[in-house]
Structures are given as C-alpha cells and as structure tokens.
Length: 217
Image (tube, rainbow, N blue to C red; front, side, top):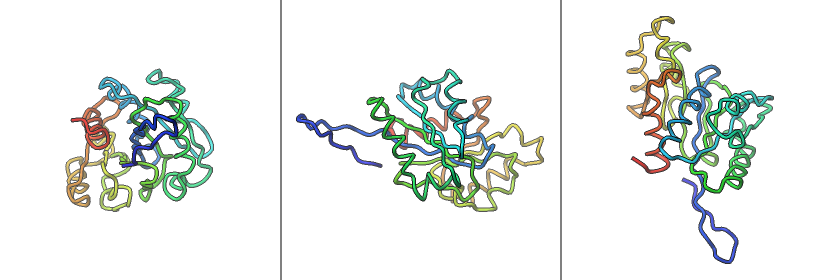
C-alpha cells in the first residue's frame, strides 16, 4: 500500500491517500459494466470514490460513465494511452498516477480510485507504482480455454473476475470446468463469477475490494 503523505503546512497534518484499484482485461470482457455495477454498491456502503478510465485515442469509457448518472461526472477522469493499453498502466503509468493525484487534490475525502485499463490481451498487468491491488476480468464468451492459456493477467491479479456467466450455454462453454481450471492455475487464489448486467457476484467483488484495500469487513 502507498504510504500516507505529510502535507507541507504548519500543522503538518497527515493525509491518507486514496486506495487505488486497477481493473484490467481484454476488450469486451465487461470492465466498464463491472465498474457501473460497483459504483452504486460501493456508494451504498459509504465509500467516497472516483474513477480513471483508459482508452487509446478517445474518452469513450469516461463519457459512458459520466452519462450514466451513477457518479458525479467530475469524478471521472480519462487517460488517452495513445499506444498499447498496458503501456500506461505498467511500463510508464505516469499519466494515470497524475490523473489519480488530480482527483485526490480536487476531492480531498476520496477513499478509493478505480483505474480501468483500456481493453488489452491476457498479458496485461498493472504496475504496483500505480495501484495497490488489481482485478483482471475475463468473460465466458472469450472461450472456456482462457484459463489454460495462463496469461500473466489471469495468473498475477489479486482477484480474477469471470464475467458474463449467463452466456455460457449460448457459447458452448461449460462454466464449472472453466472455473475449476481457473482455480487450479491460480493455485486457489480468489476468483468470483459474475454477471455484471444482472448484478450476480457484484456484492462479492465489492466485499473483496473493501477487505483488501479499505480494511472493512
């Protein structure tokens, strides 16, 4: 976890920085839908939050969240990667760090900032200079063999979310074996199956975030 920083003022007051959580995964896996489901769930529990989205050359995901009515639009910042999506969350996260710092400066009480990566491949991971804890999202429509491919994102994330479980019967995926294989390759590290659209599993994802970075149970 990043350490509290001391304000440069006569009182030397201590300011606790917001916890920063990454949400990555392939294009279309449901990252934005997951955030849309998490916002009201976290707000219901009294969490003061903000969001940073990443896209290649647009602000599409940020605009979607701003239009959603779920969160104050000024609490959503956009980073345009301009290159491979993982560049600005792993190799050089400077732009995202600056976006997070700006949100903390504008909203001093913010406790949690969610960083949504641009859609990437299974090798996408987050720098721990940027986030304290991170989620990787895959979906069953991407294929039941995703766990067997052992992508670094799937293996190294703190929490794996298997989304769109409602689609399994329609795309020829057997959900139980897929989840079992994911647990095996992740050595039983946390996995949550979700349907972000209907809300299945969202409470459990919120529980995991609160316990891991805000130390609430």
